[in-house]
Amino acid sequence: MSTRLSDMTPRVDLGHDLGTGPVRARRPVYVDLMPPCNNACPAGENIQGWLALAQAGRYREAWDMLVADNPLPAVHGRVCYHPCESACNRGEVDAPVGIHAVERFLGDLANSENWGFRIAAPASGRRVLVVGGGPSGLSAAYHLARLGHTVEIHEAGPVAGGMMHFGIPAYRLPRTDLSRDVARIEALGVTILTNRKVTDLAATKAEGGFDAVFLAIGAGVGKHVDIPARDAAKVLDAVSLLHDTSAGAPPLLGRRVVVYGGGNTAMDAARTARRLGATEALIVYRRDRAHMPAQAFEADEALEEGVKIRWLTTIKQISGADLTVERMALDGDGRPQPTGEFETLSADALVLALGQATDAGFLRRLPGIGFTAEGAIEVGPDMMTGEAGIFAGGDMVPGPQSVTQAVGHGKRAARHIDAFLRQASYVHPPRPALAEFGMLHLPVYADADPNPQRTLAAAERLAGFAEIVGGLSEGEIRYEAQRCYSCGNCYECDGCYAACPEQAIVKLGPGRRYAVEYDKCTGCAACFEQCPCHAIAMLPEAADA
Image 1: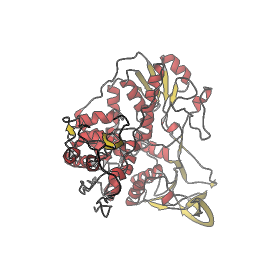
Image 2: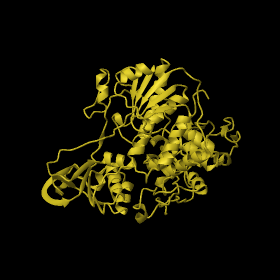
Image 3: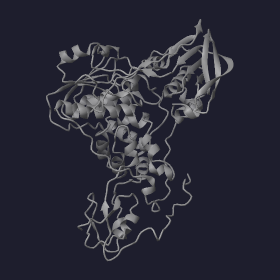
Image 4: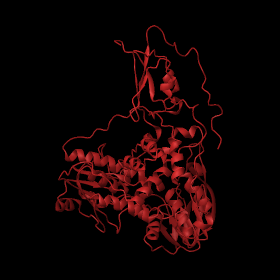
C-alpha cells in the first residue's frame, strides 16, 4: 500500500520561532493528550494503552486494561464497527491500525486461557436489578459487580445476550464466543435469570429488595409501514427473521426474497435469506448508497454473496407475489422524491427492515418515566429516568444504536448508580486535549501496511453460518499493534533525550519516562521537534520562573 501523503518532509520556517536567548521564554513540559482512537470509542476504552502492552507481548496486562472498560472483547473484536479506526491518525498516512483485530485476539486468548475478572471493591451490601441481558445490561452488571454491588439480571429470553444472540447472525458472531464472554460475567458473581420477563417493575423491585434498577431491554420490536396490500405474499419483519433463525427455527422464505430497508439489519436479513436457500435476494431502499445507514463493508459483503440492491426505490403496493415499486430521485437536499415511474417486482417473501422500537409499555404505569415521541425512554445526563433510582441505557434511550454504544451506556450508568447508592454524584474526569494528526512529527516512521484478515470465499459462505472473517496470528497482531503512533502519549523512544544539546533531559527508568532539568534547559524546543507523538508541549515561561 502506498502512502497517502506525497511528501512527509516537514517544512522549515526559520522565522517561525525566535529561538533561544539570555532569558528563556518557554519551557518543554511532558503531557498526556487524548489519542483519537480513545476519543472515538463509545465504550471509552484506553485503546492506546492496551495496544502498547499488546505490542510488547504483555497480553494479560493488555486484556486487564481493556476489560476495565469493556467486558466483551471477543464480541467487540468481531461486531464493533470500530469508529476508533475511522479516527486513527495513521489513516492519514497509509491505513488505520487494525484495532478490532487486536481486541479480538485478546478476547479469544482470554477465553482459551480461562482468564477471569477481578473484583475492584469490597462488598457494598447493596442490590441492583438489571432488566435485560443484552450488551448494555451485561456491561452495567459487570461494572456494578466490580464496584462491590450484588447484581441480578432478569432476561426475558432463554439465554443472555439480547440482540447479540438473536439479532447478529452467527457468521459474524459465533455463539460460542458470545457465551464465553457472558459466562465470565456470571463467574464474577452476577446472577442471570433467563425466561424472567419483568411486567411490573415496582413489584419486582420491592419483592427482590433492590436498591436501584437499570433498564436495558433494547429495541427488539421491528417497525412496520402501511403498504396497501391485497392477498399479500409472506410478509415478516427482519428482527423476527434473524431471531427465529438464531433460535433454530428459520421461516420458509421461498426462492425470491425482497428486503425493504437500507440499514445493517437489512443487509443481515438479505444475507441470511441467501443462506436459507433464496436464489434471489433483493434489497429495496428509497435513497442512494451514499445516504444508506448501513456500514459500507456490510453492503460490500452482501453484494459479494449475490445480494442485489435497488437504490432509489420504494414499495407502493403489494398484490399477491407482485410488488409495485416507484423510482425515486434525490432533491437538492439529498431527500428522495417520487418520480411517478413505476414497475413491478415479484417476491415469495417480503422482509421489512425499517428499524426497531422498544417494547416498554410496562413502564408507562410509573409516572416518573418519560417517553420521546418515538417511544424511547428519556434519561438525564446521569442516565437516570424521572423515577428516582431507576436508570436506563442502550437502544431503549435516544441516540445512536450499536453494541458498543450500549456497552458504553452500561459502564456510564454503573458509575452513576454506584454514586446514587453512596448518596453522592459521579463527575467524569476532564478530557485531555485531542492529539490531532497535524501535531505529530512523523518523518521517523516508515510505511507499514496493515495485515488483512482472511475471509471465506463468497461461495463457501452461503453453505451455512460459519464465521466468515478469521483472526490474526500472534505475530500478526504484535505487528499490527506496533503500527500505533501512540498519539499524544510518551512511549520512551529516547528521541528527546538524544536531541537535547544541553543534556537537560533525564531518563527516569523504564515505565517512568523523563524529567527536564530546567536549570540546564534553554527552551530551544529540540526535544519538542523530535518527539514523534507530541508528548511534549512548549509552554510560556512562568513570570516568576
